[in-house]
Amino acid sequence: MLADIHNEAAAREYRIATSVFFFISGLGYSSWASRIPSIQHQLHLNDAQLGGILFALPIGLMLTMPVTGLLLGNYSSRKIMILGAMAFNVVLSLPGFTTSAWQLALILFCFGSTRNLLNLSANAQAVQVQRLFPRSIMTTFHGIWSIAGCTGAAIGYLMVSMNVAPSWHLFTVSLLLLVFTIYYYPKTYPDEPVKQLVKKPAFSLPDKSLLRYSLICFACMATENVMYDWSSLYFEKIVGSGKAVSVAAFAIYMAAMTTGRFAGDKLVKRWGIQPILLYSGWLILIGLLLSAALPYAVTAGIGFIFTGLGVACVVPLIFSLAGKSKNTNSGQTLAAISTIGYLGFLLVPPFIGFIAQATSLRVAFTLMAICGAMIVLMAPGLKKVEKSST
Image 1 (tube, helix red, strand yellow):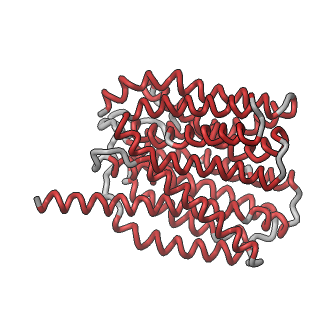
Image 2 (image 1 turned 30 degrees about the vertical axis):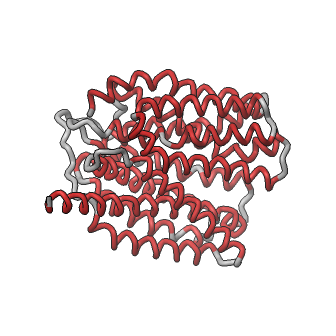
Image 3 (image 1 turned 90 degrees about the vertical axis):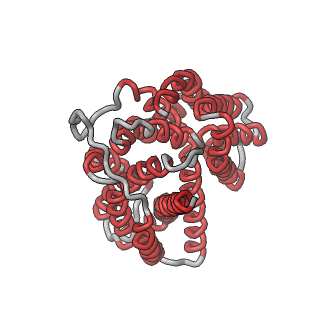
């Protein structure tokens, strides 16, 4: 009895500590994003120059994905997580102090690299902690990331309103997050890496058995980033709303996604992972088609809510399923799946711009509904995989 109580208390402590690292990732990233306009003005960059410099972040993320997978194959996720968090917080403090475009580009490359290191290791740690619980807890971790993102955006708005320089704003946030990192690291789960029976190169695509996971992840992450980049513009250009309503439309989408992530674990307990993935695909499909077919404030807003709810749980549940195998290293598995997922996250939004330029955003959003259809078609095939991996 006492042993059970002790185990439950330890599992709770591991869960809280892992949640803090998701919060660190979300707050740090949104704090940087909230000061992009200020830093653009500080360095006298035009939109084209800024766009080119911002591309350094995803380049750093993608190029270090194989390195992160290699590290997670040889070291525990908690050790990589503390390394990633420390480096992430240090780099976060630097953008506001840059004096030239090349300095900012170099820092953003490092920012993308350290963010990848932190995010993948935190997800690998979350998969390990999930194994200590009989119920799903994965979507809540990602919900905490979303809450942290909203918190960082709100703090950023306050800092801009008070005319606080981005240098001091980001330095203060990074210092605070470093304190959280150091304090909560000893409370994280002391896992050990699972050694692969067959040595793989640093960069490797997922095994055929995991390819379905990767494609679902691709479809979801592509939709998520398209909504980040284009939802406000859709309301402004297609729905014909003012800037305030356009920003509110994005906020509605974010609120729906965050709500879905906190509700996801309870829904998984009731219906299971595979049905939730299937319903998520339908929500994305219906939400995007509704927004495109009826481009009015109310109907498009409802479509954005459906899309946000659909996007909410897919990636954390895919990570949870992929990490259930006892014979593979969860960190390396997540790295391989994330490689495909991030291709969707990074490459699809620019194509939406090209399609919109050639036709319209309405046509582009209609085509994006294919991502929801992909999930609907592939989710039923996960039923056998889900049962065999538990």
